[in-house]
Length: 189
Image (cartoon, rainbow, N blue to C red; front, side, top):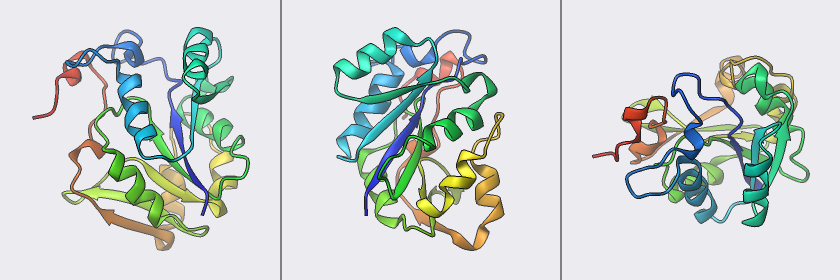
């Protein structure tokens, strides 16, 4: 099954106070660079959604052979970005929706979720009883994702299809750790 990773990285990070995608982690790499490196290490295809006008970032990604699209709907919120990104998944039978501000998701976690995705299934990683990211959607759900808007994200798609959700227990605390505030940049531990 052809499954790829759709990385949402078009947000403006109001709570962070600056462009958190370019904020430095303790190892000197940026949040987005680290998030993409871990996703890329999985070996799955990547498509990164950036904001319209993120020209420098788009050039940087393309120079690194990472496909990206500028999302004109990014100002709506995560739902608008996700909807626009899903419409660009040519030939994908499943998509892992990942967030560009989650630099501690292990490459093996991307692969484990991808292995659970089926055309009619949503695969959700779980750590210590809580759901996290990336969430894998089979192609049966692409039209519902493409109809999203606002800042709600894909939660409403999961809530509408509880019988099609497959939870996958993982030993990866990184599926819960995102960057919302500067204090979140500290290494886990």
